[in-house]
Length: 356
Image (cartoon, rainbow, N blue to C red):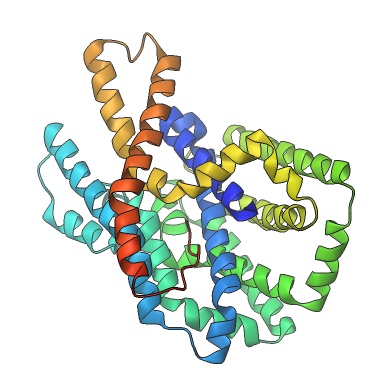
């Protein structure tokens, strides 16, 4: 439940960034970072035992993930093709093929990464992580902690050297969408699981769980306040094209640890109405992620045609929210659930794993 609530918070940030526009881009960046770190953590939580025992079936795992998200991805890409044709753009076959094969972020070009279905770049990166998850998990879980910290320090130094040397206009297709760099987020999730599973991690987790309920709630509130202050400082102080992914790594780690501790010792926290809303959004996070661009585009076209887009901005946002939720629910009932049930007939071990 805690992970689903965090997924709901992340998808809300992503959707708001696309509904509001450039002034809230930082929300999408933080939400995407949360999804990547959650992926590494949840996959490790679900499969580290099987990987260690040699029982992890990589092929079956990849097929299951594709069954979950590729049909809607395919529909979204085709919708993007139709939308661009309607806007007067010619079909670009190489970019379309790259998107359909989920390899667009390997071309080191923003034109490829964000063509037709802009959010599919995330799926390209997360699929790469799924493909090498077993190898990464084995290495991170078995290497000595001292060596692991040394490697982490080297990678972080290399990352921040890239941050200060890469021109702003190239941030999108390098540090933000290029799969190798986004592996860092996923590896942070795996390392977080290793820490939680260690004796020192269990001790810290136990101490956090024993804190009074009021103190825990205060801690969550202060964490959210600090997170919001960081978001707005990021917007106002950093260059427009800057992608400050590293700013959100500590928040992703603390959110996961804190919410899991709350769920273990203070489950009533997750019965609060606002947390229930986030949990419900988390349950639909994949469908919302894959369909919200379609809903936003359709509402924009209708509102522009009716002349209401600029005169009633608040109501436009409300209509977009309703349409996004309705389309996501339809996608779940008409596409995702039938395919999942079909796959489930061949497997009784269904786990809520992966980014969504």
